[in-house]
Figure 1 (cartoon, rainbow, N blue to C red):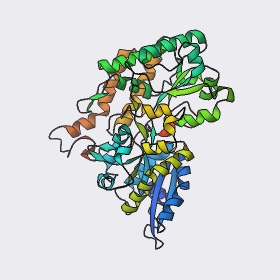
Figure 2 (figure 1 turned 90 degrees about the vertical axis):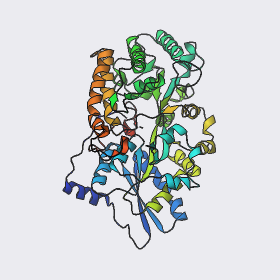
Figure 3 (figure 1 turned 180 degrees about the vertical axis):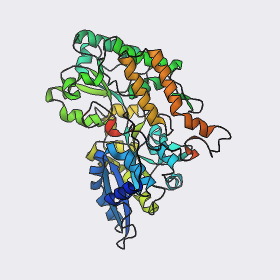
Figure 4 (figure 1 turned 90 degrees about the horizontal axis):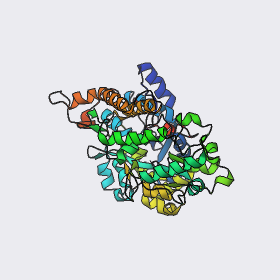
Amino acid sequence: MGTSGIAHRVELRPLALLVLAGALGVGCDRGAKAGAVVELWAMGREGEVVAALVPEFTRRHPDVHVRVQQIPWSAAHEKLLTAYVGGAMPDVFQAGNTWLPELVVLGALEPLDARIDVSSSVVRDDYFPGILDTNVIDGVTWAVPWYVDTRLLFYRTDLLADAGYPEAPRTWSGWLDAMTRVKARAGTDRFAILLPVREWQVPVILALQRGATLLRDQDRRGDFESPAFAAAFDFYLSLFRRGLAPPTGETAVTSVYQDFARGYFTFYVTGPWNLGEFARRLPADVATRWTTAPLPAPEGDEPGVSLAGGASLAVSRTSAQKDVAWQLIEYLSEPGTQAAFYRLAGDLPTRRSAWHADALPSDRHAAAFWRQLAYVRSTPKIPEWERIASKVSQYTEAAVRGDLGADEALAKLDRDVDAVLEKRRWLLEPGSGAHGAGTSAGPTGGGLTGSEGQRDGNDATSGRH
């Protein structure tokens, strides 16, 4: 969920691969006499809590041993790439859904449609459609959504009510009016909204709401100078020009939670990982004075679209235990298991039946996510998206800080994105010698080169992410 950050490139040496494979113990005991051994790599907090779910699986499958390897989000891309090149992939692994196009290009994933079609545990119609769609590339389902992330409004209900809005606004014009009123009441040293200027997500969300495609020409070139993206970008920048958001972004705050509690800002666009953080970190006197709401839309009564984020579970193409690996994914996908996982980790389920099991659609803070998840879209499903996202961050920050005008920033963004997509254009060019099209054209080199999509980087100003 992806995830902006600095791209990581890995220089792979045979000796380093051997050392890493030995340190992780990957591939050991697969033929153990005691039964099948299935290796699961899970990231961050999920890697800590998933072990609590394994005993029930092994009770059902006493001849299977599950070995859980916890991987820090900051190292996940590099470890997966290194494991792939070294032939040491785990059987099952967690991946941010924006990573999947890269992994498909590498040939690292096992297609899952045939297994899903006959599964009684993984039911397509029970998933949020926009989230499930992020796992489908070139018509093939490559992974199963494990938990969902999307972004919406967290806001102070008391401060918004004082400004004349008993409920969160539903349109951009209402949102702008509400923020203007909040700012007028707050004074010069406080703001209406906190917008981290190093994040690409909010400008992209606003552009998607305007109908921007982000890329054009079969995703071969940037389309950031399009009227739709330019209009959304101007709206975003206007929040800084009007003094509604601090021009220094996240550097203006000492702590998101402390500053939200003291009313330094009223609105914050963030995701479900902050539900638990707000509950734990906000003082008691603020605990009942904040809530969540779907994102406003440019116009109309329906929510504006947000990003379809989250993490998925995939089977390695080279796994010697594909059947057992799939059984583990089926178990972790069951509504009851997903509900238990939510209670352990706070990750919102991907299965709608799991939401109902914990009455989440009526929960005061989770209900907005239930509604927002019906209005989500994925970013372009190409391996280069991670690098493109970092370029969006770069030029958004330059425009916010006044180093570049909006038109110049978008022109340079398109130029840089076209350079990033140069190899893609070559692969899709008739007569290039590349087989197929899109993300399934085969390895392009580059692979997992971005830290965008890392959940640890989803929210640069929060403690967990």
